[in-house]
Image 1 (cartoon, rainbow, N blue to C red):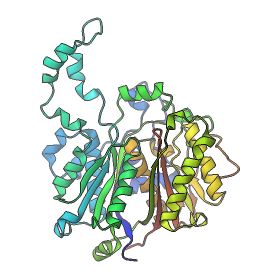
Image 2: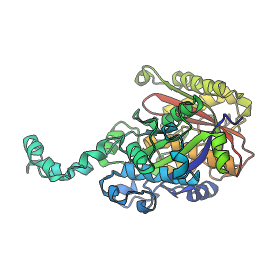
Image 3: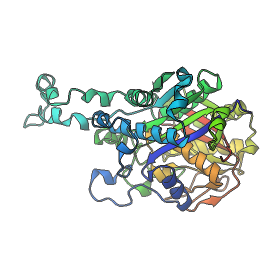
Image 4: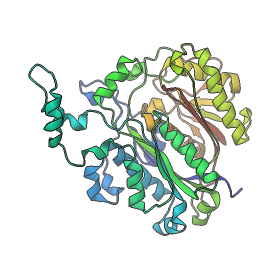
Length: 421
């Protein structure tokens, strides 16, 4: 079984904290990192990573001032994962071309970083003078301001700072980009195109202009009490920032270093729902979700009865959450426990699937299933086994991780508990 692809290192930052320990504490206590009161500021409406020192993780200290928040979070999480896997420079240098980097990103900043250029070009009547903006406004910005707009900057910086010379690409495919990156990295290692991969997703703090578009589309909400995974009365999701990165590799490589293994990745599927925006009813969506989960179980060689818990993709959009509930009920019945990390950390777009995967790995290791907090009445409440309000001790062996985003992307992973060092 040394050909297994395993998770040997995890790095994570989210509204509940920085690093594995703080995330384990949040799971064990059912502690949300989302703001609970509206203090009138923008940041009381979104989930933010607590203050931390990126210099503790990013080797090139001078580069930090040129990096976007997205890259700072991603580079920091990647270094945490590398350190957690006890992966030293000497190991990376061996057969270096077989070290891969696959990173997911969604929104690369909003208008905030170029606000100085814009405000300098606005007339007293509120109209933007685009001639002035192009000729003079942008000259007020740093020459390297555009680096923050490039979603592949994070992967490039991780490669540079760790001298990794193998496969390197960034997936920019909406909110599922991060979990797709994990799946594609798994495929690369499984198919022996790489010995190991640093993979995951990172998401910048949500800017006001982007949040306004989400609110207008009735996808997001300001109020935590209105946002509940699987909640029948939920009004959308709470936007947040964060990053989760993983070191995945062949089992024998991890065993050589004597590191603990969080989980083996057994299966991965990724689909897109055609004509997604035309589908209005949950029962029309659920067959697509079923297809994704069934195919993932098939590729993993796992029967539905073997799934102990499901780290659900539900994040507060009723149509999607109801469809996922129907799909889970049709395949699994009431047996597996169901949770969603999004009630604790919000919905962090490209980092959402990776953070769910990190939660799943830690729950496998600790034999616990974290709760859905701020829970309302849930879809198919009597037909499914939701874990609510309080964490639940459980003998965990195999879990399913779902990520079904609001663009129509559907992704699933099957994970099996690893072995301690």
